Image 1 (cartoon, rainbow, N blue to C red):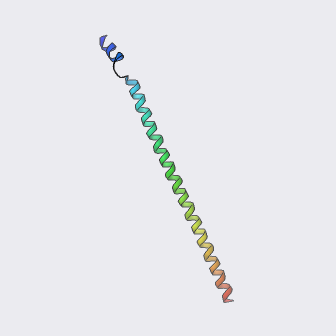
Image 2 (cartoon, rainbow, N blue to C red):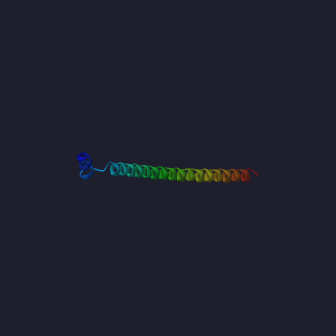
Image 3 (cartoon, rainbow, N blue to C red):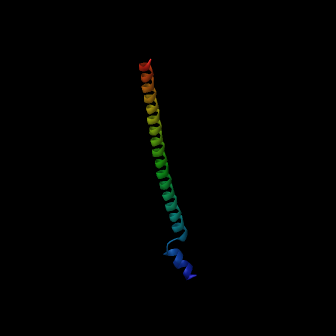
Length: 73
């Protein structure tokens, strides 16, 4: 009986410690998810920039080809 009284009175609550550990793991998981979301957004932005650059390059090539065609007529 004294063991129970000692562990309950002065010792750390194992359930509170487990809960704190779970909350820490959850916070770390959420932080990791946020980092992955940011990396995904950065990748998407880079992909969009590359797509726009490719479209601009195609337009430039088409304009040059049109000018060459008009000069050769």
